[in-house]
Length: 535
Ligand code: NA7
Image 1 (cartoon, rainbow, N blue to C red):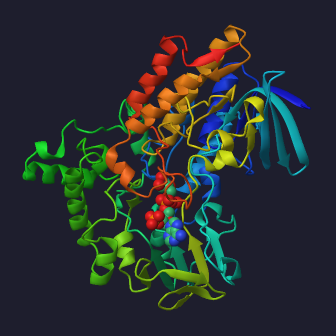
Image 2: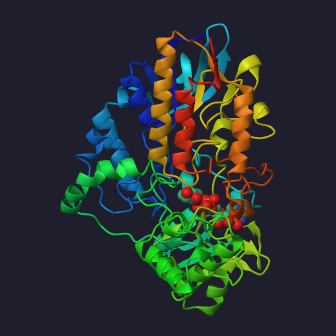
Image 3: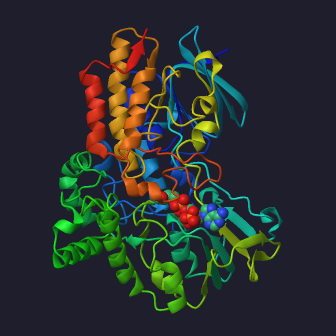
C-alpha cells in the first residue's frame, strides 16, 4: 500500500511536531511531518482572533535551543499570537524544517500493520490522497485543538458574521463600530473582551461562569533588555524543568495557615503584583488541596478585583460572594484591563444563569428575557481537550482496535506518551501527561528528548516493535488519578472533560508537577524500560 516509507511520521506542525522533527532528524531518523494547515504554528495558526496572546512570559514559552533563541527577539513579555507565528517562521529558518513537511494535508487514518511492524498512514491533501508507511507514528495533534461549538438553536440562521475563536478567518472579522456578541468568558473570551470592548459600538458578553482572572502584568520588551536578559536564559530554561508548573518560580513549601494573617496578605500582594499564575503556582502549596486555603485566596482575589469594577450589578456577576468553583480549579486566565473594559458603557453583561440563551436568530441572540441585536457573534466556547485530536483520525492498533474503543472507559496511557495495544505509536503533550498546569514547549522538550533516547535505544538493539505493557499502563493510570489535587475535581473544567456535554468526567492530566513526572520518565530509563515489551 505504502508509496513512501519513513522511520517516523509526525502529525501536526505546532510545538510538538516541530521539535520532534528537529530532534528525531538530528538523531538520524527519516521523518515526515504532516500538517492540516498551510504553515507551522499549531494552536497559533488556528487561533487568529484579535487579542490572542500567550499566558506565559518570555523566555518561558519557547524552545531552549540556543541556536533558536540567541538571535530571536520578542516584542512583549507575554507575546501575541502574531509574534508566535513569526517565531515559528524563525524556527523553520534556523532548524531547516520545511523540506520534511507536507502542509494542507489532513491525516485520515493510521492502521498498525502487524506484518511489517509499521504504521500505514493515509492523508488527504489538495492534490488527493497521500499514502505512506512508517516504523513509528507520533501524534502532535495538540491538546486544545478541536473547537467546541455548543449546539445552540439557530446558529446557522445568523445573518451576521460568526466564528469560534479557534477557527478565526485569516481575513479577520471587523469589530469597529459593530454590535458584537460574545459567548464564553474563558481565557479566549477575556482576550476578546479586551479587544472588542475598545472597538465595538456595543459588546454584549454572555457569561455562564465568572472568570477568576489574575493580572498579566504585560510590558513591552526592547532589544537591549533582551540582550542583557539572554545571559540568564540557560539558567531559566534549566529551572523550568525543576519547578512544579514549569516556570522559573515555585511554590514556597508552606501551607496557607502556617502564616499569620498579615504575612499571608503580604505574600498574596507580592504574588499579585508580580502577576501571572503565581497565586496558584508561586505561593502556598495547599491552594488546590484545602478548601479553607482556597476560600482565603478567593476572598483576596475578590477584594482586588472588586476595587476595579465600578458597576454594582456587574460586580455581583463578575466577582460573586460565593465562587462557582474553587479558585484555580479551572486554568486561570490572565487579564490586562478586563474589569475596566467590562465596566464601559458600551459593554453589556448578561448572566446566563439568570437569562439563558434560547436561540440565535438571523439578527442576534434571544434569551429568556429579550433579543440582543448583533452584527458579529464570537464563540469563545473552548475545546474538546485531550482526546479531541486523537478521535478525528481513524487510528487502529493491534487487531484493528480503534482508539475510541480502547479509551471507551477512560484514558489508557503509559507515561503520558504511549498506549497499550498500540505498538510503535507515541504522542506528546496529551492525555495523562503534564499538560494543564504546565507550559507546552517545556513539556514537549522533556517528553521528546526522552522519546528520542528510547528510539535510539531500540534502533541500537534492532527492535522493530515496542508496546506499553497493560499492567504498567493500568498502574500508571491509577497513579495519575490518585495524585490529582482534590479541589481540581470540583470544577467543570476541560481538565476533566467536564466542559463537553456527555464526555466522561475523569482526570486526564498528570498533576503531580513536572519534577515528579521527569522522575517517572528517568526511572523507566534507569530500569531498562520495564514498562515496555519489545520484539
Ligand atoms: P475555556 O477556558 O474552556 O472557556 C470556554 C468558555 O465558554 C467558558 O466561559 C464556558 O463557560 C463557555 N461556554 C462553553 N459552552 C457554553 C455554552 N453552551 N453556553 C455558554 N457558555 C459556554 O476555553 P478558552 O478558549 O477560553 O481557553 C482555553 C485555554 O486556552 C485556557 O485554559 C488557556 O490554557 C488557554 P463555563 O465556564 O463552562 O460555564
